[in-house]
Length: 226
Image (cartoon, rainbow, N blue to C red; front, side, top):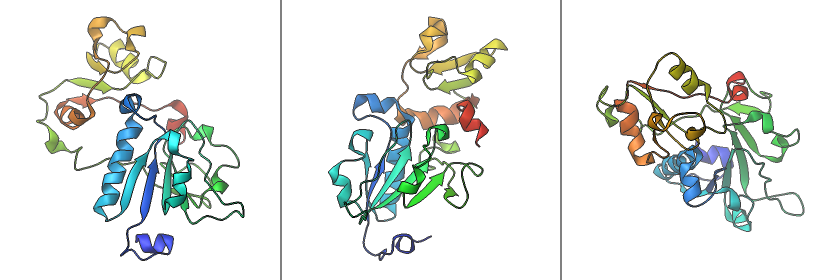
């Protein structure tokens, strides 16, 4: 759908977008996949001629959002309340994309937004929620980013999120030798089983393309909700 049709404005004039990520600002946010996903979204919007920027969670409800044409909130662990005028109106279109933790959505939350999308074809009331599956940036992540089968046989990049993630636990249990990168793994793995606590995002496309198998998993509720 053309942007002009979505927002009632001529698509010959760029819209000002803020893509709100649930990650914190600064070095701490660089370890969050949400940060890089938001950056790729902004890049894609700019390629479409839009004026777009990433906004971290601390600026989600700042007065600066009143100057935006569109605010796209990537819903994470914290609720974001759209800014409205005292009369209840707003010149800003507020959209939410539920990409994680759907169990945290509060009963009255969706009604605050002009449009709601979800990275699932089964979650939510279809009269309210439009499926919009999560994607990646094919300019970065594609088979040509690295030489196939020249990297790790089994690769996992991610934090523990406070638990022994099942995909890693199960793979080690059946004798798999997983190259693990991420924080918190010292609580579950021996030092020689952990490659590093960080993997530079710029190097991920090549590492994924070169690996024999890339492992990942979902939170149980996210898997259940598709």
